[in-house]
Each structure stands twice: as structure tokens, then as C-alpha cells.
Figure 1: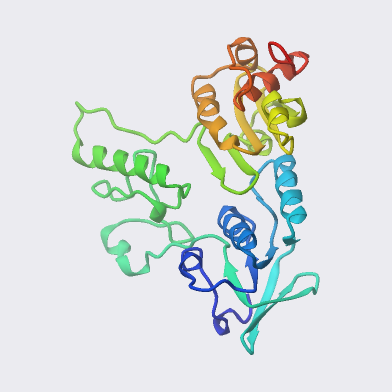
Figure 2: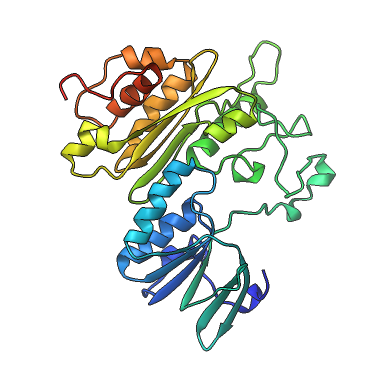
Length: 314
């Protein structure tokens, strides 16, 4: 991106260290860091512009709900590529691929992380890296040097603290128990949950529909709008939806995505369902507590079986 070296800009961590509130802020990147930080500054009173596709890895139905909420709250959303950045007289100017020119007091770059492994002399240790510089590991967290294990963001895996903790535990076990009598610990990402802590939240577990298709599944999906969820009706907040993806041949649940208030709380149950191989029929027939957000799992599963999205008593 042209001109970036000339600009004094925020990072995702330095954004939390500001001692004054910028009058205006441009955020480049529509992933979870850009969205969470951008909405934070907007709610504190900054005029915020987000440049980039909103939640690019999310189900389009869920990304649309979040996009609308951001715009309705006053955030400007420009779903284009930023191509140049410049600074003049304490202001930042960003140009986009369509030629649009945007100005702000501060700039936040939230386009992902890069590996910082150049100074580790990994080649001398026989530890390979990928084309982005991340250390290559298998599901045991073992590198190309069988005596070296790695974990955390340096391996380029999903960059969540609970993933780093699990991978670290796996690496430590395998590094210290390298014998035929000890079964290797492995990291299994099946049903991995993630939450974007915006308002509304956007949460996922397992595959999106596109990811399931790319992985070779024949899949079906159903979407339940929160106007059919009793908890949302009681909350007077039906701005949300839940989407379930299943294997068309077995009915097993492959993934779940949701946007709405508190939907992150649904994802533990969704992960359990995916990891244990539950089917949409089983979810439909299982108990679900009335007037909870988690009831949406049973209601959306019922749509696979032409059942009306009704609770026990509503």
C-alpha cells in the first residue's frame, strides 16, 4: 500500500493505549480486530470509516446483518481495497480502488498479522516455514525438525487465545512424552468456535456453507430469522439470524453461524453438537429451554424437517 511509511498510524494494540479520542478514524480491514476496534471508537464518539469487506470469512447472511447495524449506527462502510495512504498536516488520506478519497485524523491498520520469524535462524535448526514465514507444524505441533515443537500465532493457525493454549498443551505433551508407550496428543479443529464481539455479535462454529462445499461435502443449509425466536421477541431485538449447515447425505451438522445479541453463548453447544456428530433430526428432537437464545439451535434444525419454528408454547 503506497505511502504507509509516511503515516503515523494505530495498531490493534496501540489503539487501546490512546490518551485522547480521535475526532475521526479510518479503519482498514473488516475482520474481527477492525470491526471490534472500529465500533469501540464509534461508540466513544469518533467518526469512523471502515474500508474493506465486512467479516469476509463469515456467512453472507450474517455479514449483512452486521454491516447494516454498523451503517445504521453511523459508521461509514466502504467495501473496497485501500490502495494508497498519505499524511499531511496531521490528517490521513486513504484512496480506494474505485478512486474514492477519504480523510481522517487517525488510521488503524487491521489487515491481519505477519510472521516475525526472520531473526530466529530457523533454517539452521531444520525448521521449515511457509511462504508467509509461519512455522510449519502437523496436528501434533511438531515441526520439520522432529525434536522441535511450536505453538501459538507463530505457526499461523487460528489466532485465538484458546487455540494457542490448546496447541501449547499439545506441543508440551508431545515434546516430553516421545515414546511408543505414550499416545500423541493432537489438535482437532473440528467445530472450532469464534466470536466477533461487536454489537450485534457475529459467531461461528465449524464450517460455513462455502467451506463445507470446498471441503467436498454435499450440504444443505437453513436460516432462521430472530423474528421467529421467542427470546429475541421478548428482548424486543429481532435484529439477528442463525444459519445451520448439514451434510446432505447423513444429516450431521457441519457448521453454525449466527448474528445477534449474545449469540456467542450459543457456540459452545454448537461445538458439542458438531464434535459429537449430531444430526439435524437429533437436535430437533432434543430438549431446549424455552426463552433462551440457545433454543434457536432446535428451531433452525427443525427447518430441515419442514417443522414450523415454534417453541413448546409460543
